[in-house]
Length: 299
Image 1 (cartoon, helix red, strand yellow):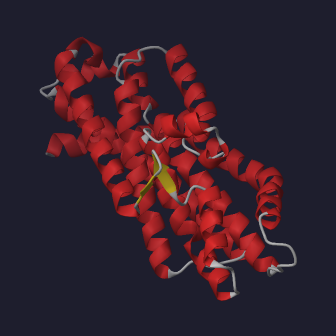
Image 2: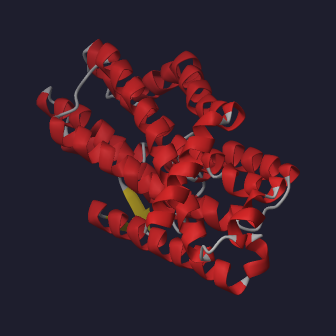
């Protein structure tokens, strides 16, 4: 346990000391926040207003609060995974520099070393994502705050679960990488593509029926929906309070992926949590098994 704790501490320190990796991990949420606020905010507002019945007026604060919550959830859904890949670069960097070989020569089991990378990446990513969440809470307080204490707690839990998922996924993929070019290629692909396939950039409901069914098999889709449900929960309650018909509220939930369907069957929040938790466990087991089956890859 002492060796595991020492290795984890070492990896966290190296990540924050490496200005390149640290800057790369921070730039994703910063760029996304700027892009969302400057470009997508008006799109989300216009989409929300266009969905309202004719002659139905809505307070400006509610419109801004809805758009802000959707932006916030999209930012977190992407960052929890993409930042994990950035933080997990240390595992590959140690192979490139030969530090991993030095560590394996010490009386340390490969499984302990592998889990120390996972834990260190989890800690580093959580720090970055919770800082990003803090910035998001400040933004929501400015444009329209409808979150309850319960919503905030669930959002923090969702972040933790999504970071565990992102860390496990990046650990499995990065396990097979051994060059700087491979790191850059994987990082670019994940940063560019993950937001689309998880429904963060565009709601899955806006895709074709066939693509919706394919994306319903991806666990990241449910992680995005969980965060979106909890960031928008207060705005939906406010809509009901100001007189929105129930069917209109449900239609809006469908349009922003708060309601997800697996082959036309509605997926409950509890089921979404189960899918995410099982996926995390399976990915961690695969990661550990990879270390046993391909010991040469750990060097």
